[in-house]
Length: 339
Image (tube, rainbow, N blue to C red; front, side, top):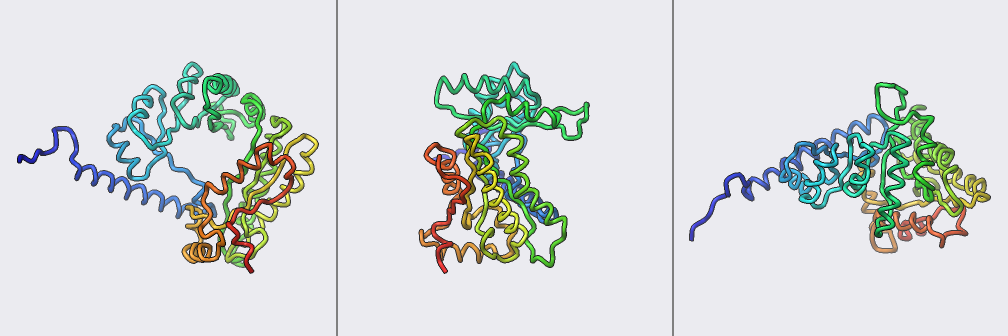
């Protein structure tokens, strides 16, 4: 028997394994730096999404990157992405470069997320094309990010802030709004500063009011607004004073908005999740103890999964939840029922 060596130009299995491990190590190092920066800034690392720009990167290396856990890939040209996407499975593809209107259809058919909607005209075109694509099949919705020029610098691309409501309206009726961004400083109350409280309250509670002001004019009757809360809004958790207070404020805002928006036919509710094993727990010094306690005390016999929370949010956005108003739906497998 003759043992064949690697074909010229094709990496051996050993080389591929080494490449994957090197990418995984680099990726973890970047995540560690992000976590450290978030801790210094009082932010939740779980709020940060890392997109690896794949421009000029060969398909083989992208396949290794996905195997290493780097699953969000960004391309800045539609035509360059099309060939790669067909060959790299398991990735979520983001368009991170400028999008010309004449390539909008191809972008919708190619990418999972479009991050550079920088004008009302482009928003209108994407909405119109998305409706055409949906009529041809079960494709539902396309996530996009609106690029806003908050500095109002004419040399930079993006919507000026005053155009944001028009862009939202141009993208068609908004029938579901979910406030799921959260952050906060995890410290005892006496070790916090006023800026920590302002930051936490602003992101976790006040932002829901800001979102409602901008979005409600584009929301038809039957729409739904959902905020994400946590058990710390009513229970005392270690070092959770700022986040817990902000979540209590969020739930109060949900009740007030539910009454205020009821005449418009818009429902407002919250979902409060139990302990979910995500990157957000990394900022807790007692992370492992939290997971062990939750696993041992949850009557359902397992931890809450992100899908459990997402399913509850989706339910509140359906017509079946028509008469649920101003409530906080607890999704914790029964954890909070025990004394």
